[in-house]
Amino acid sequence: MTTPKNSSNKKSLPNKSEREFWYDAVAADRAVEFFEKCLTHTKGEWAGQPLVLSEWQSEKIIKPLFGWKRADGTRRYRTAYIQIPRKAGKSTLSAGIALYCLLADGEAGAEVYSAAADREQAAIVFEMAQQMADASPPLRSRVRSYKRSIVVQSTASSYKVLSADAYTKHGLNASCIIFDELHAQPNRELWDVLTTSTGARRQPLTVAITTAGYDRHSICYELYSHACKVRDGILIDDSFLPVVYEAEKDDDWQKPETWYKAHPGLGTSVREEYLAAECLKAKQMPAYENTFRRLMLNQWTEQATRWLAMDAWDKCAGDLPDLTGMSCYAGLDLSTTTDISALVLAFGIGAKVHLLPFFFVPEDGVKKRSERDRVPYDLWIKQGHIIATPGAVIDYDYIRAKLNELAEQYQIKEVAIDRWNAAQLSTQLTGDGFEMIGFGQGFASMSSPTKELEKRVLAAEVNHGGNPVLRWMASNVAVEMDAAGNTKPSKAKSTERIDGIVAAIMALGRLGVDAGETVFTDYEFTFV
Image 1 (cartoon, rainbow, N blue to C red):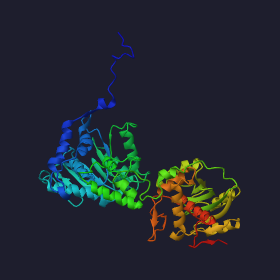
Image 2: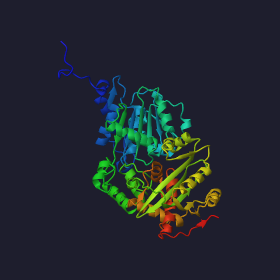
Image 3: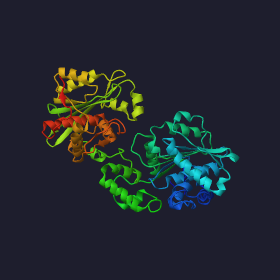
Image 4: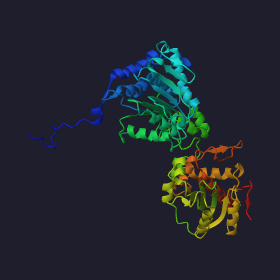
């Protein structure tokens, strides 16, 4: 007799996890006991006491990592992304994992490595592990400690601290990698070199343990995004363990309930009074707000130091009106001939300023530039947001031609330009009939329009049309301040390109002069 397809008696096949993975409680408890019986705290008020894990450390990290197994008995998880705030015991936990994989994982010839953006950061976890091993009678007799390595001669195993030079790491055969503060990695090279070195191991483990960052084009943000999707069931990755403690985007960062939600160690490894003091500092010093939110609440921010709030910027992304025939002021920020240059027109209509940006890059090397800046220049070129000029350098004649083309459509009253490397083009544009204004890049010229742009963004009195290139640049901006409280964008401190924002500020500055709102006296002159 055949069972009907829709019969409730039909048993569905077990899902993939039920078929291939199983939980080994003995192995999970053994890993937790290793911490408590073999390791001690090395610093602070608990120095010398057994390293008893908090519930969140044992239940969310150690037991899943070492308890879940594959059908062949090897560990299920090969990569763990652990995002926890500062003062949550990150280094202590990492050191314990490294020692367990070195000494108790059953891996002959184990190669355990500590890596980070620089050797000094990588050494923090290593040195803590070294102190733990030296202070532990069960471990001390089994290991030999050196300046940059811990060796277990009986199993031909070692634990070493690495420098950040990726090109020197080929040839490793890593069994466990502890990647500390992944958010600080300048690129993905070291991550790729190390993780690909685990291919010959039966059950390799890579643990990325970090606070949140601000570079959304980084390897860390890539892993964070993947971790969130795996956690939320959007993606299936059975070998990836996501552990993310963070405040949500809309949570009030000033409330203690948000702190407890984001910080699993609050009340144990760090006291509430400490976070309250840090929060007060962030309220009193706006430039510290992003630091507090990123390091203590694990929120990914748009910049290292807050200037433009990106949620406010995004609210200014309305459709641009028909600006044909309208008067405007232009800001032109010329890069070196191999980088991106920006032209922004500012139209003052009623209480709102409309920004119309144009960007220029050399056509050759777009792929390399995309990899360097980690943004889709090629896509933006196809979408018309960037103009690619032929050759390996920007042809300023294209910028000149574009300005003359725009002058046929709009009334460009002035072109504000950074004088650096601009003499020839300025002279040519003056000959074309443009009123060229040299715009100083110091505090005296830049501070007032910088503050004006920020004020208008917060009040939704700017409309930038949602241009993605300008948004990327807005998210990169960090400002610097002098002793008098004047501010200006800092290309040195900003994460990546900010040329479009600088051009917008210059255009806004000249618009303000025309409106009688601002007076600039710092090196302004007309090219002749």
